[in-house]
Image 1 (cartoon, one colour):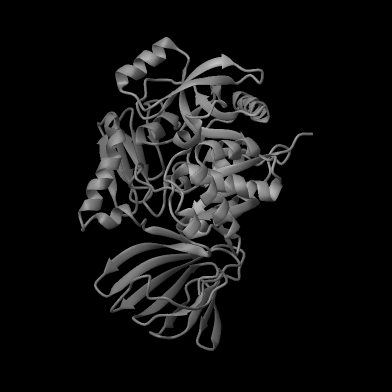
Image 2 (tube, rainbow, N blue to C red; image 1 turned 90 degrees about the horizontal axis):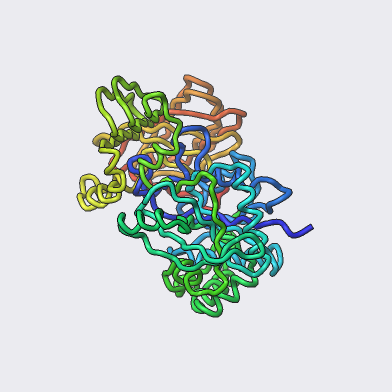
Length: 475
């Protein structure tokens, strides 16, 4: 039997286009929109068949490393590795580094499938057929991309014009087309033979690295050096910063795909969306009889063809049509559906104003390797948080110079260390942590631990944490 496919999942980036739910520190692939799984988890699920796939290699960055690890753990997915980019250098460098890592783990003849972690894909017979065709083309030495059958003259995607059919069933690429004006997109749809460029790929590693050597040797040299000098940190592989940052900042399309004579495309009809705007979330969501897509905590009256979602307050929308209303814990976006592509401009405006810049960066709910916290209320010299700790996990042994803390357990069991004393707290019990005292919080139970934390002091920033010991290597 031929070798299994090695999935390479790209999980970096910044969250701007689906604000206010996505933020710079919490991009869309890690957010639960509607349903219990994140887009990253859905991507892992698609490559979970052990008869076809090896455990995935995930490429991400320092900030998202524990999100990746925890969401994979929640799903029960083993990973071959979590590769950390020290700086952003676009997709060419990331894919080159992942290919080098895959060759080291699975052999130099490995076949990799490069997948974005933030796409919504319908997995059906046509999806599996497209993957089989792509694999056959990659084994024939082609660099394969997946072309999505366009459903409208979209201007937010690049297009691929297909050429002659190949023995594998894929097609040669005649040309790549940059994101077009609407008139040009309309003409391409009318002409036929054009597909959206999905950003998904299938490569045989030897051929991919050979084409890097031919067309983007600086990228390949940086990737090889960064992997050779990489450092192991728990379950993470940290690429060497000095080597990696020497790579040109260039996409795989510009670096390789638009130059190689080996480019091939698999025309695909499976359902696909990059969820790059709120209207695409509405199009792919489960619409009710009034063509509305809604989440919990919403009430709609006389409203049609709209997207209404809340991760915070209860939203009531009356008598509107073709609108987007999305609430996070600390912000609400309201706009016309046809203006969904402009949310990125809204975020840029918010970034430029000191009073609102934080709304684009940090989400009220922050995830950590042990669980996370939600900021509930911030005032002068006090702050209230909801802390949640996963079963069997514990925070670092730490102290603070500028604040004291009061913890009240609302769910589960807490093991609390204060100085030399260790106490077990049950629901409705509380404890006080004096300023400067060494302390630790752990969840020894089988269910999620939740508590309310009240901080008081002259400075309440997250950088007022002096870690003494930490099982996640942060001390």
